[in-house]
Length: 133
Image (cartoon, rainbow, N blue to C red; front, side):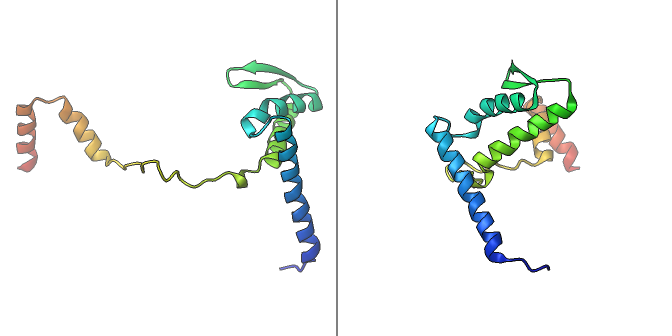
């Protein structure tokens, strides 16, 4: 492994970490506290930066361009600034302790229940007899 100047590298990491916090604080001062709220503004900014238009879609403001190069550059710009301002490392990925764990259902059991649901009690007994033999 190549040796680097740890002090200089750590100083860069500290500056990057502090910058992200600074950006988030500055956005919060403007009333924007999370990625979903910031996204339309980031899209409008990236569209202006890359010279493409926007449109209001079902999921909010999106890019309206046939130029694939400009479109991809604008999308990457949005992702980059939103990730810098609201790092996903700050978002908790821990499961909600109050949420009930998902129960795993056996595929065979699920299918058997689906089939049996359509049978009368007499048909169910007959099926069990046939399977037992």
